[in-house]
Image (cartoon, rainbow, N blue to C red; front, side, top):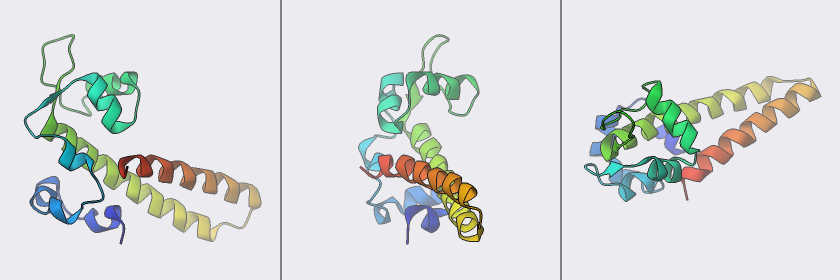
Length: 128
């Protein structure tokens, strides 16, 4: 059973209590709960650009612990954010695979296959 399927219905707090059962995601072990992460750190762990990190901070998607002009994110807040992101990607993958199984038109099948590949690629980044 994949990570996303196993955690679909549990909260971040429940996941934290059972985190050792999910060794395939090293991200949750690699970051200390109390550390303050900079934009560069988030860029590395999330596999996104600095601008994406800034957008997450500006739009309130991720909690920032710093004065104006600096982006510092608490390790626990970042792990919670990534946990929810992984759950969402897993759900998207399940939905897209189900859609792919129902499609008949070859052009729609190709689009759906590319979307599945893209989601799998993003998920695979976190399993490194």
